Image (cartoon, rainbow, N blue to C red; front, side, top):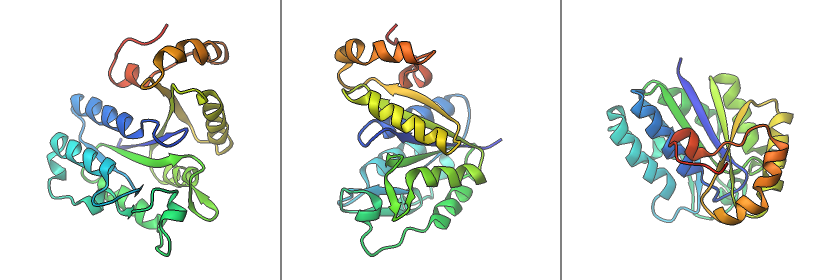
Length: 215
């Protein structure tokens, strides 16, 4: 069965693109045809940095993407580094177009990685947020949601708020920590709570790269 992996995070600059790349490469090594879509990218000057980076990756992993264009990978690109609702200004973001592109991409891949923008409550429209997009995608496609949180100070609050929102929307998800900043302080400041609060702590590197994690 073809699957969509929606990659979201507790905030911006947490590691969604990094996680997306790990997931793409893992499934490609398993012999799966992989695809990538970033529906919205803001802060774009000349080319979308995140979208272009992973577009190059996916073309190497799946030759079916050789004829794709960047507009099919990142359909909505805005120069202002802000939430899509603000960055789009007078332009319209059509959710139907995003859903259509997901369906189209799945013709060329077994696993489609869809990378979100910012966190769950980032507004796309006045009363439509990133979590609403996840919900709409999940209703139409076999979707696995992946929540990434950071190892920075403040990650506990952001993580619990994000988990609470996903549960309110009845969205099933897997949660992973991205150990990319403040690793030493994380072990002393945040990890003790996580180990008491959660039955198991999972790291994105463990799941998709199998590096050594904190015990």
